[in-house]
Image (cartoon, rainbow, N blue to C red; front, top):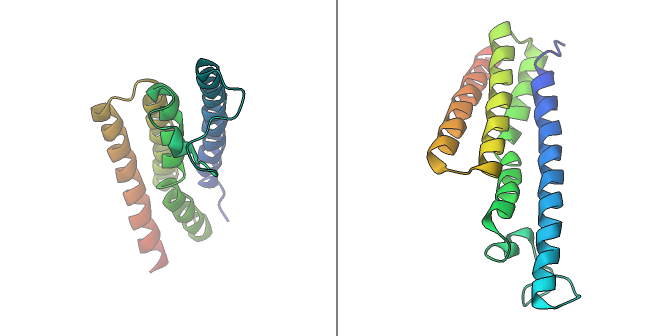
Length: 147
């Protein structure tokens, strides 16, 4: 098995974990500040038990929630990327496939940074669209290689 194409997937997995920690390290201080502002020593909650991260929408600053939004995005489309990379690793990727996989990873990291720090939609959408083109190319090549 040619493992060169697995490296971009491993890098994106590591980046996803970095985003998870970034989200936590920005959310916890924001939640603490929110508790202090309310004069409460209890946990931040909504009116019901079992709250979820999205329950913090509108309660903590938007730029704090951006990290969470991006982490959610990294759990969505990249799952297709991981599957296609495994298929290509099994059939033997060519150099163009490895380059496309690295391009996808680089664009997703750029998308993460943009969404977490600036979050203007036109640039974020362009990064998403370009990464989707790279993923589409990889999916087509995987299909062609397995037929």
